[in-house]
Length: 279
Image (cartoon, rainbow, N blue to C red; front, side, top):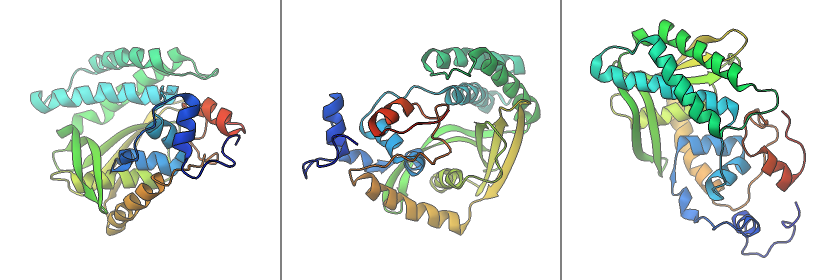
């Protein structure tokens, strides 16, 4: 990459890119406190983490991210209401909440040429209806969007518990373009972190996955936090922290998320490193 072949010894990518883009250099102490989402992003693509967390470049949501954010906003609003009222909002009321959240997301989101906002909105509405009818009546929320703090593997951690059932089950509500064949290891990492830092968890984690395919549907994956999961978090946090501090970062074009549909930085990545990010 031009400009990085023979840098002065004291320079690293943060210094070089900050000067090039006329940005303030972010302090290395930003890695003193980590989140599971930060580590997940870093393990998936170091450069995406670098752009977002060290350079602080704008991170407009992709259409996929915007849909997830709007669905999550609507459903979490219902669960916060349910904690006090013990009742759910009517389904079409939650669909309306989704519609308002989608308009806000759409205003700042980046859409590829093959993505039609109106069609995505209809998919989101159908997924909200499916989840409200099939799943929500059985959920008795005890905690919604609760911030968490603690130390794992000698590293200070901040996280957020999105939803916990009264029986202590942690529930992860997310969207996917296709039904996953297995539990994502970094999902296990993220929710093991939450289970270890939360108060009163049962050790059971349930992923409620809203699939955005041609026929919107809901599938569930359930697993228990194991000793191996605990070891995974204790090992990965200090390793990630040291890697984040080294000053140079690799783009991962082999990542399944290295796509114009998934990464908001694909144009910047092509400009800085060359190559082609596929749709």
